[in-house]
Image 1 (cartoon, rainbow, N blue to C red):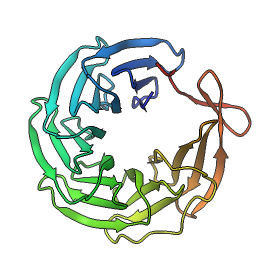
Image 2: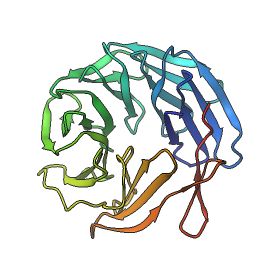
Image 3: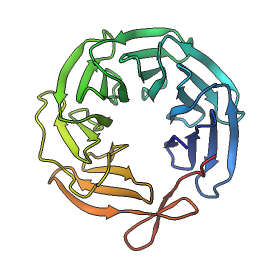
Length: 277
């Protein structure tokens, strides 16, 4: 399994796999609802649900983007073609009308989800692989993280950098906007988490000294008060929950059982990861 995402209501999970397929699961029972969805020809690098949960988008090492019906596992749009190297990350705008993709070709493209046509891009500026990508909630900006050790914020219409590049010292693995768009967060290979002012590029002190490996995914809570950051070793998944306002960790979690359940500090079930295909 290479990528997972919850539906907005939390009742479903979509997973992408190194067997080139996409599956949709019931988050409560663990049963497959739809899939495996077949159409890609290489590893699925990134998946996401539409806000209404009716469709799913996937990006693949086959350099294409597909959109799937979440009930029938049929392709409803795609393949979107234009990248010259594997796609690493995809994200949907809140209204579902556009999807953004980042690639090994160092570029970013924005696509019309109905037609598959490029509506903006390729955005050029990164000097290495684009590892992570996300829309702001209003869809006007895109954030990207890269192996070139920078975070950039782009105007989604014209493809120009509007803020950044925010420079670190190591590869950036994951990025996200806060819901209000005023802050961005990044996770890196050196196990650190940083919050940046989206306009100023100013960063608060390092949020994490608990991770021991790269921070592979990152997200703000809806109210912007919390940040969650997982990292992985060969033996466990460590999930840290941070207070984004006071720059402290309030819960460090590192329990993933053999059935795929992440447990809280008191052994409570937090969420479930679909099995590796």
